[in-house]
Amino acid sequence: MNQKVRLVVPEAPSPQAVAATETRAVAKGGIRLGVLDNSKGNADHLLKFIVEGVKALLPVASVVSLRKDSVSLPAPADILDRLAAESDYVVTAMAD
Amino acid sequence: MSALAQLLQAPGASIEADSDFDAVNALVMEKGWGDGLPVVPPTEARVAAMLEYCDRPWDQPVAKIPPRWGEATPLRLAANAVMAGCEPRHFPLYLLAIEAMCEEPLNLYGVQATTHLCAPLVIVNGPVAKELDINSGHNAFGPGHRANATIGRAIRLALLNIGGAIPALGDMSTFGSPAKYSYLVAENEAESPWQPLHVDRGLPREASAVTVIGAECPHNVNDHESLDGEGLLTTIAGTMGIAGSNDIYYKAQPLVIMGPEHARTIAAAYSKDEARRFLQQHATLPVAKLSRDNIERRVKVTWKERLPDPKPDDVLYAVQRPEDLLIAVIGGAGKHSAFVPTFGATLPVTRALRTADGRLAKSVEDFRRR
Image (tube, rainbow over all chains, first blue to last red; front, side, top):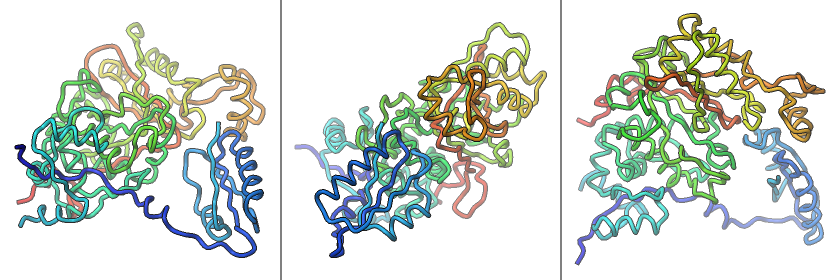
């Protein structure tokens, strides 16, 4: 029979897995939709289609569309703050 | 009960397994904890030995590694260092490299997750490079030295296991790169005619330090014929203007590696700053080398102020300002240098090796628990 050994786990758990289970409240007038264009080529077209698709499926009270300058860098704080303040859900996209 | 044994009682901190080497490696593969190569089993005893060279609290994160933003505790880092084959005395430098690459300017989230093929390159300077026998000479980027191979591999395992840079999940690189197995060298300070990289970056010469760059693999610059510095710099500059490089679209800080022979010839006529200025001015790419769509969709957007209406003879620069170019002397004999393009949306980070109380470390033994 094999002997047993205790191994130290090298990985970190993902905090995203916890966040994904959170529920979100939606106002009666419809969702406030945020859109973050990551500035990839055609991302604006893809997001436009997605917004149209969401509107066809769900009541949408408002849409706030913002664009970050670099696809490779995080969105600046002012953009994130505005999306957090004015949106219930945010859609972002990459496209090529 | 030891301090480590207590930490391992936390949920998810440890796992019991068959002690057989093959069984441990089968488990590592099943869990997705490796880089594809066999690993040294991260047993409690081996991790305890690794942590003898850590003067920080073992369960407190020293950084969060993107894209998962996993907490890099010394305990988890030590497990990855054991798996990579590190010696315990390697641990302080490894931890420093992880801390440095998680600083905001490097944009590790982008470096890890991008479709580009970059990886964090670590250049080690100072006395610790010699103490740990980190290769800076012949074949510095290749095999043969345990410190280069294993510290670099430990970094990659941490980026995978803690940061979640899992291929096609957290790491979307189109090609990946051999540099994603291990990418760590030392500067060949003994053969350099100039002050070393970490001094260029503002640290005292006696410091040991890492400089981390979100980099491609080195591209060779063969010049056996030029007999003076101007000739060699012309060839190096000619290698830097690349149509497919990210650096021509960003205010990037790429790296020129000079082989010691090239460096000596150049230094006979140029200071390091003069060489930097020459390379910045001459490392250009004519707009005519770019496609019409790239001119319309990238050049006119990125450089709209300098080139609102680009003409074929206008030029793009591989590096925008002389001070943005990093120069290091690495390698052995031979008439070669190398250019290391970057991810573009990343800036190098240099950090000194310091003990927990903030003193510049003179030796990795400064970190050893007494």
